Amino acid sequence: MAWTTDLVLFVRTLIGDLDSSKYADSRLEQIIAVAAYKVYDQADFNYTYVVDIATKEISPDPVDNKDTDFTVLTAYQAACIILGSEVKTESANSLSLRDGPSAIDLRGVSTALNSLYQDLSTKFEELMNTYKTTNSIHGQAVLGPYSPGSAGIGNSYGYGGRSGSVFGN
Image (cartoon, rainbow, N blue to C red; front, side, top):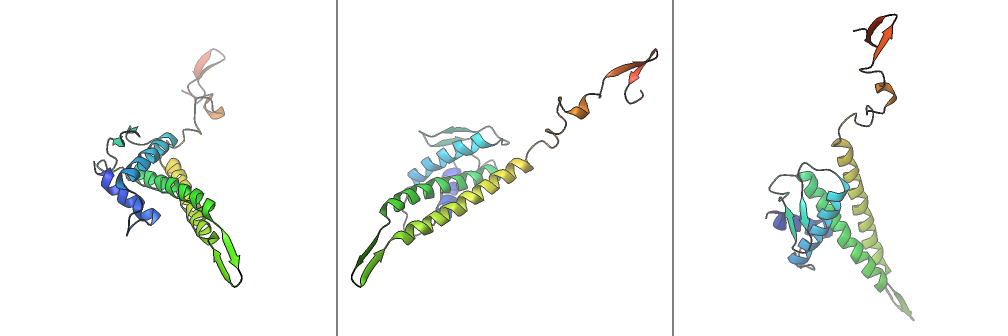
């Protein structure tokens, strides 16, 4: 399963977990499975994916199938899940202490993490919206069976004993 290698490295890069790993590979695989489940629920893809969060499986493998759209969206969603959790944890730990001339201010850590989380979330939404608009069936919403312009197509009308379509057949 190539996704367990490639997507784990991709997510590590997005969240900056490169040198000394904060997250175990198995934990990242679980988060990636959750992200894949959420992404698959939000859009239609070329493949029918089966995601099992408990066993950390995504089938068929999106990396082997070269489904770059699903892979990138899943990586960004996983990064958003992780950073959202870190923002929540760090915001509970943010404090500011002053004792005479000495001061400790840890509020900047949660502010920086929140900014990174907001940036990644915005990027994910932009990627998802771009995917949805560029991979939809063009014209589907414009010329559906109940569109006003499609009412006369294929209907036959009688004109003084003559029968024919609206377009003169």
